Image (tube, rainbow, N blue to C red; front, side):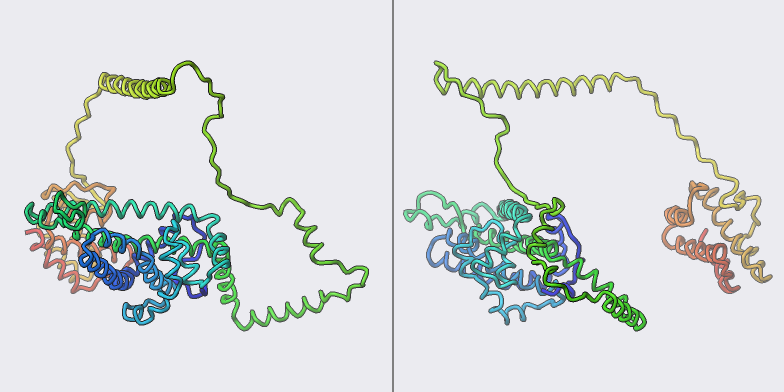
Length: 484
């Protein structure tokens, strides 16, 4: 892996953030990932269902779909690992290079390593780093010192989600399938050759389980791959390497290179070490051991142990039998729990009664809206405007007074909204808020005219860009139709 070609943000993350990073990568490249995954997965599922149908044992389909999960995982990791480095492969390319992901310890993954609870986290060690045997084991131990527990919990979480989706899809299908047709799907002869009783599983259940697996397996592999990448960043300092590369690129100018060369030559000239005497020579290993004795060079180690919550107490054996002591202990614990529940319920009931008994003041009635005499420094009283605002604005535009003409149109529109359309405008409103209220009062078509008027007025008032006479005359001509 070459950190310089990574297409993700390089920084140290917490383990759960790393899992979110994997899910974000899956959201970004879900089309090619799911395309290749579904092609291979559909072939495996079809094979499993065909084997179950020919042998007459539905449980074989469940076992094969579950047991062959490492096959799906390798396809998914192959696509994701290439996409992270900018090579987004299509299904045709993935299938053409099937030997690259099928020949990466698939037999071991289906035999000895099938019950690995951190499968998605350990898979890149074998598939991407091509480490096997003792080297692979040591590598997995090194990577898993701070992340294996999170990978195990990721497996447990995905198993539960997979089971929930299985039950949900199966229940949903039961709602759409008639009762008689549902009975026909029951393959009782697969479990009971005599035909007595009902079969526990059907081929439809196997297909639903396959759908749940194909849906959640990319999430599981992507989250584990994100956890793996984060651990590599922590151990190998990819983020530091990329920061140093950025610094070097910034200093790649010719003058900077010359300055660096001069400084390096000066340092080499003035700090060139003299030939040490035989008496002054020291063993580097001894020197390193002396330096490492300093307490500053501590050692960090994370361990997990099981510890009892309460200290061990000597057990006293009485004349009572064991079952009686156990019953008394269980009864006492149950009564203690019930007492706590009763106490909490009583406290909540008393608090509710006290809150209801508190005097409440009636809410003050809202004052009626009074149209403001001025808004944004403009007089809005109807008597302060000419009878024909549009004609007056056109006359001002002909005189070359564009700002006054726009101001008159804007004042007339605000006065119309406040005094005739009952729009409650306040001095705290901005132009955008006024536009939203105007659209609700005037409608979409007329609101477009008001939007154009506000934009032209804002450009004139704030940016000092005077409109042309044609623009002002066009706005004045549309004034009457906007307020009709």
